[in-house]
Amino acid sequence: MAFTAKDVKDLREMTGVGMMDCKKALTEADGDMDKAVEWLREKGLAAAQKKAGRIAAEGMAYADVIDGIGVVVEVNAESDFVAKNELFVEYVKSVAEVVAKEDPADLDALFACKYPGSEMTVLEMQNEKVLVIGENIKVRRFARYADGFSVPYVHAGGKIGVIVNIAADGISDMDKVTELGKDIAMQIAAMNPSFLDKSNVDQATLDKEKEILMVQAKEDPKNANKPENIIEKMVMGRVGKYYEENCLLQQAFVKENKISVEKHIAEVAKQLGGTIAIKGYTRFEKGEGIEKRQDDLAAEVAKMIK
Image (tube, rainbow, N blue to C red; front, top):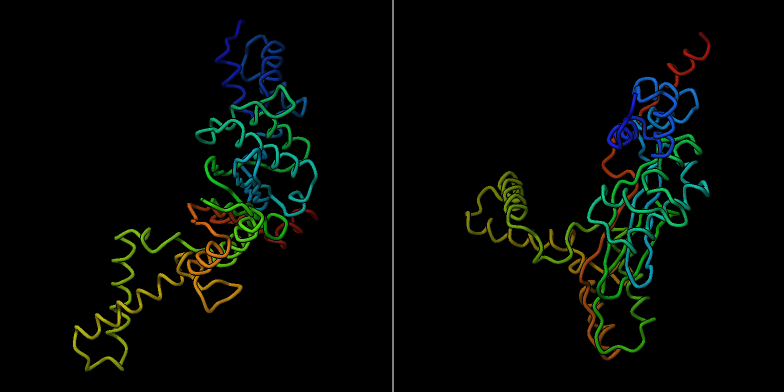
């Protein structure tokens, strides 16, 4: 029974196995999809399919500047142990290289790109790593900055990855700008600001925050006899505090908390005789927002002794 290119693609999507192996399996199975899957399982090649459903909340967040392009990626694995594996780290860095060079529009486009030094795609190499390393591995997200001057920072061996994008004009000493960028990146890693600047806070977020602060102010016994307009002024003052906590440029600079990040940047720019502006940043924390598997140790032991 003959098979088509679409059959090969469908088998690849079903099993997570590379195109060439899927083609070989269909050839061996005379085009029968079920038999092809069975053939791949017998060869141990379809193991990636089973692992693909397992929770991967560990891994590595990685940031780098490659040929002037700022990149940050998050690649997940199941255990912290695998995150330190040389094969895994090599894969993460190669993915960052692909993002820098190919400028993929999204994850699907990234997965279709050719993996460096190989005839495989990024997705095929990912499946290959799953088979070799023995854990579910997946690229989760990435960000890319092609313009301006980017500074990377990786915290705690890949727990957090940050890329800061800077516009610097009239400055010859770019080492000082790099030093500033590293300080800002460390601030972002530590403080996790939600916004770059207070002007970036959307109206819906601001209205919700004001609503919460208004309720808090009215429920405070100390404000029981205060008129509405006074309470509103108090709330506006607290909105300023919200900016200081959630907006990078309004936050207190961690190395010198008597001034804001915004003022520190202005001081450094003045010393260097030019202008410096933070154009954007991306912060990835590994496993952020992923519900981690809660292993039941007693149940695992019970299974082992049955």
